[in-house]
Image 1 (cartoon, rainbow, N blue to C red):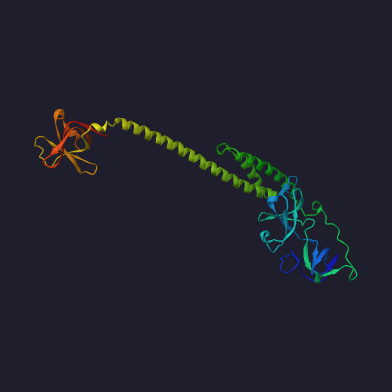
Image 2: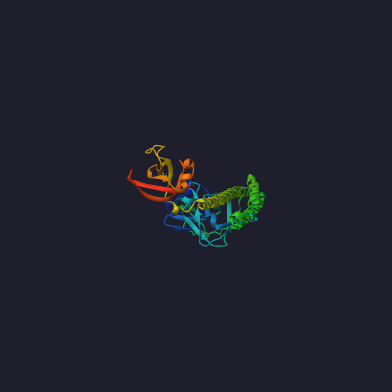
Length: 343
């Protein structure tokens, strides 16, 4: 045992001023010294000290939310400091293994739990501020073993029974949520689970249970959004299939309505000719392509002479007949015996 001989003496995470400070101790306070290194004394963490441990390796006991059980091996415990965030508190005090128990101090930050320093987690103070209790040169008696973590006294909020009960409810609902999420997307139903979590989240006095439940509700909302998007996609796919089916059916019907094109001498848009007067005999027509350019001229022959061809003017037609040179235009002339309107 030793006594501090000055005010505001910094406690540090390691044996040197380059290590971050974890707290302060004052004149007259006593500490347990377990070893020394150069000009620094290795001490048992005094009251007010704490450590950090990663949340991902801790399972909180269902019936005692102040106790955490380590779920991994070689899990690091870091010296805590009120002046640094957990991620910057980088000095490792010791490593714990699966099944070890730690005492939670009721605070979590950046995915870390604040815990009572476990047995074997030590800090440092400059030896110049440490006075051994006893004659000079007398070796101090070895420190008594630190109290096991389960027996460390921690001030527990009065709402602990409520928090413990709601934590138990939360873990049950979380298990149901995981089971539901394992089902196919279209079969998932979170309504009752979400309602239960929302009820826990509304009770702020339930502490961690309320925070965990609020986070889980947001997670379910993301799952439900994914369900909604998937349902919309399925509906759109069904509508597209119906539309495609109608298009295919219509195309088939239109194709069946189209005559065999190979029997026509020419296909195009039928127009009267402005080169030949309407009274000229025989009456000449022009056949135009889709860009309104003249393909050839045409005159009725055979059975077509007896038809009233005025209804075909301005329409797309196929002419059945023969093709011959047309001296007047130095192009082609079709003598047709049949006119078929095309779709």
